[in-house]
Amino acid sequence: MLGHGAGGGVESPDLVGATQAARSAGLSVALVEQPYRVAGRRTPAPANQLDTAWIAVVSQLRAGPLSGVPTLTGGRSAGARVACRTAVETDSVGVLCLAFPLHPPGRPEKSRLPELDAVKVPTLVVQGESDPFGTPPIGPNRTVAFIPGTHSLKSTTTVEAAVSDWLATNRRLWLR
Image (cartoon, rainbow, N blue to C red):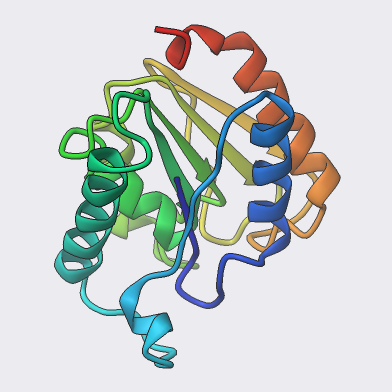
């Protein structure tokens, strides 16, 4: 299950690349639009509302069509933060972060690294080499794939390749 960032929807090039990688690996993909986008608003809801909506959608899918299926969660930018904050509640077996916003541009003292560090399952962060939101470090259970670009990660094929490699290495996650 993948969620979008604060400034766009599920059609962003990096989410398209991640979706293609997952489908090529034989996985089903659910692209989730947050309620504020569905309602036509451009401004994201507060974090607790985003998390609550995400948990509700994941719970419904896991109680229905994805019952008994190991679930990987993730998203781009703000969606990646939501997936990290809710990984335990959603019983995620892995987390995919596309363009994780480590800190606001020019504000490294406002680090969001604790959100990433709290994730205890295998995690992939695909990050632009010149991302003004910062570059997260490799950590326990965390792989960081740096690709050319900034925060927008416009290369579908480069994202697809990075996600494909990680999925191949971590096949045990969904082959329970």
